[in-house]
Length: 282
Image (tube, rainbow, N blue to C red):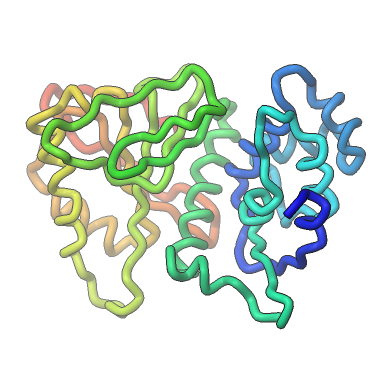
């Protein structure tokens, strides 16, 4: 299906826009050979200041299909930007000819609640970084427990692999300008709705391999600040109880966020064996 045929596809709004992903897509679309004013002039749908606000996480509602189409049409060819990817980042999915939503496809990958929560958490984290003047250089994802570096982003490096097959839990990974460790990785803990109000901490044991990696192969995590993000106070407190008396070799922290107020409520680093801490970026 060519580009103009894709533009004829009807989309419906199903969740909040992914501010971080939209920002990264627009930066890729602009490319390195144009400034924002030149890119905005090519698109003809938004002003340079509007594009700049989106790149800095200031987005209150989904972009229109017209705006996204203008971005895709005028994107740098090296970006290989797809209309569908941008619409998904915009919180929209295709509608079938019979009017039935294709949200079932996404629910087979994530539950609607989990996906929505993941995007809200990412918006909170990235929004807070932007508020404090931090520049986001790249956003990546872990695949099979190791970091997948996209070919689009230069200046990134692979983390050392585990010889024992231990993975790294995470929903998204950020590279922030001038900040060490090199990568900030975020695992988001969303309670299973089937558990109701009962606190089920058995899922914490899914992280045991990661903590063994920190113990036995600590050098493979030296480029990572591992963050465990919680949306419920009860699970945040239970996580700290689970880690009672534990000290680690690398930088790790737990973060409690309020998805309704879109804020970071609490942040605490897991004690290191050597007693080192790093300054919070939140």
